[in-house]
Structures are given as C-alpha cells and as structure tokens.
Image (tube, rainbow, N blue to C red; front, side, top):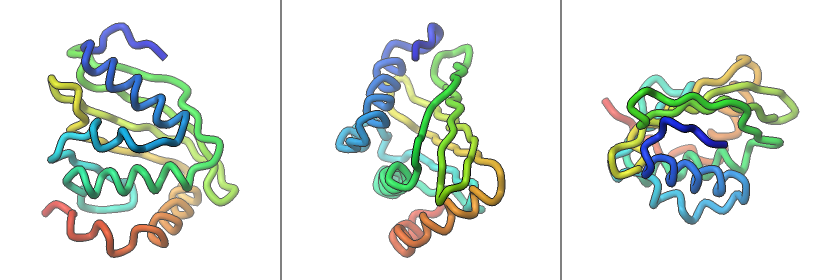
Length: 143
C-alpha cells in the first residue's frame, strides 16, 4: 500500500505498521508510538494516553480480530495523517472500521482513533477487550 503524499518518515513507520499487522509480531509497536500517544476507542468515553496503555490495547485487539484486512487508505495534505479502512471478524460478526492515525515529524504515532460499525460487532469487540484488559488500562484514561 503506497500513499504518495506521506512524509518519508511517516511512510517508513506505516510500512513497519503494515508488516507488524501482517506478521502479528508486535515487538516493534512500542517503537512506533510516541510516549504520550493518545488512543480514542469507540467503546470508551474518554481517551487513553501513554505508550504502555496504547500498546496493550493494540496488541490485544490484534489477537481478537480474525481475517483482518486493510482495504483503502487516505492521507492528509501535510502527509502526517492517514485513514486506513479495514474489515475483520469478531466472534463470528463482520465489522468495518477505520483507523485514523496522526504521526509527528519524527514518524511516531501521536494520535490513534478507531471507528467501527455495526454496533453488534463493536459490542462483541468491547466484550472481548474487556475480558482481556479489564483493570490494566483504566488508570491511563485522560480527563
């Protein structure tokens, strides 16, 4: 997947992101995240902050999604933001979603927001995430 408008450091980080998703090897994830990264979940009213919490959330969701596939991508004019459209299965339910990722000038992810539909698949994802990370990230909520 190539996006011509991305800043070179962002393109490098995005290539590493796609390799991580393809291999499910998340050892590089912490290197892609800014220490103060913010994650906005469709299941939480308040965002999560910090590389530890965001890494735990992303590492966990990778293990829950089945048949995860990116389909399309869109980049911002400044080359620091990307939207990745995806589909997956959770507990037998099909979902569609987008990852909205903002990078800084160093190619680190500083903001990650997810939107998912339909509600029944989102609810299944929320249940599975709750079973795996309950109590581990609550202290990292912002505000």
